[in-house]
Length: 383
Ligand SMILES: [Zn+2]
Image (cartoon, rainbow, N blue to C red; front, side):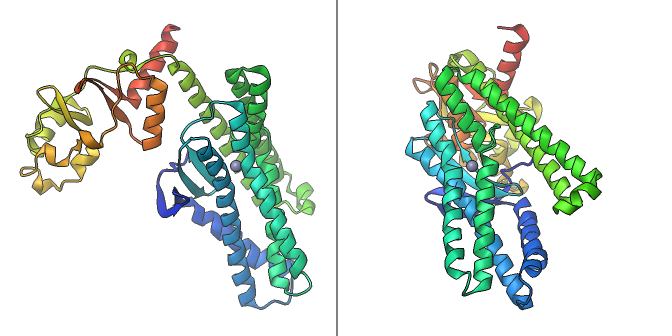
């Protein structure tokens, strides 16, 4: 799978981080070239060479602006219901909003999921209006508007396919959840449909590739087949991943921090040098993470990233307390806090570990690895 977190930050829209994944450039290039080089010259002969490219590029950019608006619609509804949104990222298969947690009620999930396709339909309608007003006046603008109207409607319909994790899958789940009251079962069904849709796409894609003579007259090249199979693979993957996530949450429900935390973690004093830390603790213990404490009182935490921020030649002169994340900037958990809420906090802040603190003293540590081990043991023992 793609590591979607390796993306450029482009700034914020409505306070939500907007990012570009490097694979986006591939799809941007593909769309622009196929518009400027194939579609527009075929449908509208007689424009100048420059016009094809300018209209192609602008159309392509407006397509991605439409995709971002679609994701923004999901995000703003989520935020309205108090669910924080970390970022919106454009990548090869479109856009994705990183909404930090699932809705707690089916009604909220329904609105959150439906907002995207509804937004795409509205955008499609606006471009259709633009087309209506420009069709007899400026052909290039009308061509742009017509294509964008079409593609936004296609986007809405595609997203309404009732398989998880597509918007339609979420709508479908929220309805089942509403009528059966069973969140887990509803998710299972929506995920199965999502996986089925993924396999179907792969199958049809392969058929298109190998039975080219039958599909060519329909305008489906081997490339469309490959693309369809590729999207199918992505959907199947995403459906399975979201199912694992649901199982995760289910396995952690009802547990508190003190039940899953580990009490085995390396503690280092604040006034040793980075050199002492690396040779005396890091290489010896192998833990990529340290608590910095003075006589049991937590002062901060230290991760491999903190250590890497110091150049090798300064290790002798730098003390641990100069590079640690101080306790004032730290997210800490409490012994009776629900593990699910800790996991949500970790996802929201994009961190991998949290110290458990009671009365100013560190009594344990929760890491993501920790939680995975806990779940594995639980399922192995059937407990
Ligand atoms: Zn959507």
